[in-house]
Amino acid sequence: MKFIIQRDRLVQSVQDVMKAVTSKTTIPILTGIKVTATENGVTLTGSDSDISIESSIPKEENGDEIVEVKQTGSIVLQAKFFSEIVKKLPTDFVEIEVLNHLQTIIRSGKSEFNLNGLDAEEYPRLPLIEENNKFQIAADLLKALIRQTVFAVSTSETRPILTGVNWKVENDELICIATDSHRLALRKAKVESEANETYNVVIPGKSLSELSKIIDDTSDLIDIVITENQVLFKAKHLLFFSRLLEGNYPDTSRLIPTESKTEVTVNTKEFLQAIDRASLLAREGKNNVVKFSTIEAESIEISSNTPEIGKVVEEVQSQSIEGEELKISFSAKYMMDALKALEGTDIRVSFTGAMRPFVIRPLHDETILQLILPVRTY
Image 1: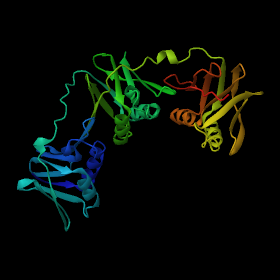
Image 2: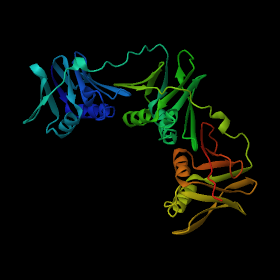
Image 3: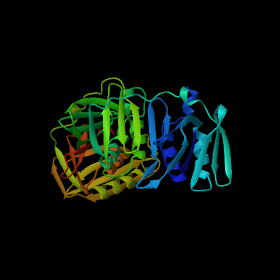
Image 4: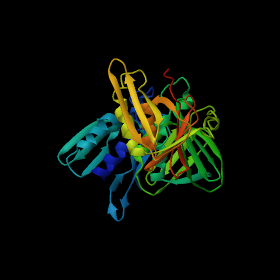
């Protein structure tokens, strides 16, 4: 194998596939990146058996030559060293050549590295996915869906299914739900599908977080193909495979209250900043709790009290308060996470009593909601 490639494109692809490579694997070859040169260009692959990422670099793009392949072939190179080397090479072009016995020469300018490669035949094959049923979603929308839900997945392995995000597709609508049983994030979006298929799968939160880092913030469509145990996200020069979590996701629709006793409309940014300030003294407490109460004349009071440190009280003007008076306590962290995920300048918070879950939604947007369980403080 022998090819010359633009360094920037190589660095970008290496960084993308590195997101799937882990040092904690029982399969030694997976600590490497597979590099394949064909007539069409160069492909890099990284995998940790849960996530696999394949990044292709075409021979040319927009009339600009990116790769010159002199001899086809493939090799697996130690990811840790290969990624560090390509980042630090001195010139804009890199030549990679594999000699017999898997010796790999990496040249750039006057610099030359000699790396011991591994046999690419030993590298696990990527799953072959038939793309009969796929649906499409714009990359920037996909990033938003992930950002607005993935933070609410559970980090505890006691219920592995909750470490993923539940994706349901029906009637050309995708519903993403994440919960750790103390809070819930939900986001809906229209998708374009060919066969009007329905799906109900759980994608590991970690996979979605890594995917979100790689895809560009553009309106380009991404193909999504779901099979029994895998999901494939397919962008222009990128394939991203993730295994699906096994088991049934809990039915969360019963958790979301349909009526409310108190409705508060407030400016998102002002509310977020007040919670942030109140949490400064709550941080030492075991769960970072702040108290929220409605007071007369359209205002709310945010307070926090940690006996050994001190207390903070702040009044926030709301746009409207409807219904019963209310005092409630909740985790400042959960509330701040929820507010950061919502888009829109104003939000409506719907309470159904001091000990019941409450729902936060942007005004005039039915596609997204956040739900938080309150904390007992008395």
